[in-house]
Image 1 (cartoon, helix red, strand yellow):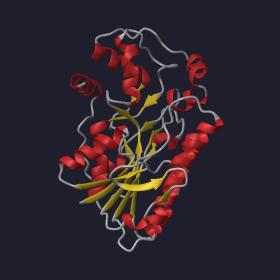
Image 2 (cartoon, helix red, strand yellow; image 1 turned 90 degrees about the horizontal axis):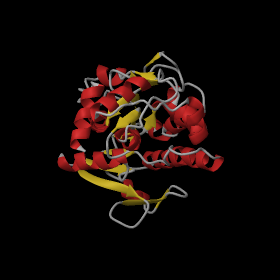
Image 3 (tube, helix red, strand yellow; image 1 turned 120 degrees about the vertical axis):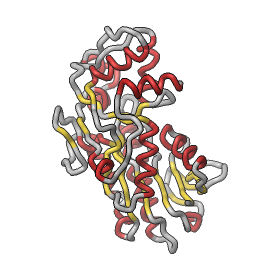
Image 4 (cartoon, rainbow, N blue to C red; image 1 turned 135 degrees about the vertical axis):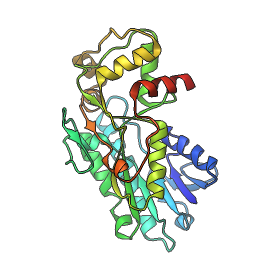
Length: 296
């Protein structure tokens, strides 16, 4: 297949491109700077040559401003614009093509569901409340021009992706290795996780499976609590986890982001992946952490 990937230098994008190359596909990158690929301006989200978008079998859009860090008004605007405006521009450009892709995969996140306590959440669950919910709703809606043009659109709603190469797990490793790890807040909040391998696998499943469209929860079948994650990581590293981070401390350090990412509870299930025959590589948290840490 011939595929176009944005966000190809990020955690998921880099792993996806490596896998696509290994599988023998023709992969081109949507880039903003000099180099080999399809170029666009990430200030205006316009394309150097829209005709360069012609003839792809699939387009996978993974780019976006990092949500990690204190959320100033300017940071929140960048988080939103880098997702919503880029998706709207890309979807419109693809809709106008003569030779359209069969499928457009646009990343989303389980932030769509908001803070929902112990409620089990599937793709049919309603949206929650808060900044991330608003971003995810607008992000997914921005792909509407592609849907209207007959392109199959899939929104993988990613949970916490586990990889020692980046994301939350990499950030947790240093304090946990030093024996300074501990639960965040009460520790009772649910964390819906997936390995990076399964994130890539889910994207490929979405590309190749014609019955998959709309939102798809990219999470392992068994979400855990923050306390369970803390204990599992401590056990995998053979380190104590006796230094909890109180909720007020998380808020003091991270501000609004703490409530949305660290303290929110999201018990999300991968119903659509299971219903369409996706086979998870990693389902047990303890075994997954051991394997990932052994690989480095």
